[in-house]
Image (tube, rainbow, N blue to C red):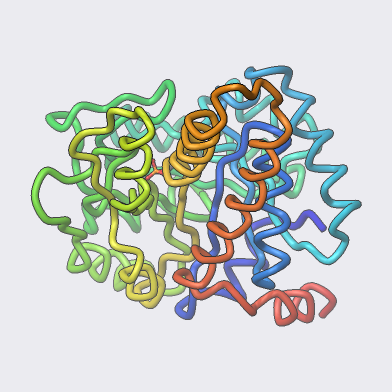
Length: 316
Ligand code: 13P
């Protein structure tokens, strides 16, 4: 069942975080639903601008509707990840998305508010919720590329004003993570002090952590052993998710780790079966591996086992 993130955040706030997973194709869609049902977790499907245009913007919509029929017990939001204003408006008008992210974080404070406000007005008129971003993460996420020099952490002093003036429903904050597989050159440094300050200014307000892939070293080593060349890749320690949740983070975004699973499965499969040219055997392996990966993430997030409680909340 498709819901807005509002109900999910209400259930999760202060206790656990909902996993927000990017999908691009059939195999990821099936693996995601299977993993969330196996672990009994509510979840958020993230669709980026690039994912919408990978085949056709209607294709993922059709896949998700089919998955919703195949897994009627699933509860999830459908969310546009890192939208510009035009893409947000298109998703709002489509009637399919229950949540959009407007990312105007590269603009100055007032311009960010002005753009976010326009999207909020259009979205709320149709019962859709809006995530906005204040501060800027470094790294690469499709069309969003931010150098370390341009990245800056969220200023807790301005967060409240931003939320009040923009009317957004949740806020993505920059607290030291970055997009992609190369997050930290030394040891990781999540700024829980800043997160705690933001929570004090915005008690009860849902916060979002982008750039939260863990980039497991075992996965990187297996990819490299099967011909990959990922050097110095590093991510966020997943055992920190619960602490972030206690400080008001209700949505944690994970994309890169899913791509690593895809890369590992396919590299190893074709290395071990060089004579093979069938797409279904590695596809099946990937769906099972992706489902397992999702269930494990949901355990770290604390969302595993929460599905029944969310159903109760929705049914009132
Ligand atoms: P990762 O690159 O760490 O998976 O982050 C994804 C993300 O934040 C999508 O918005």
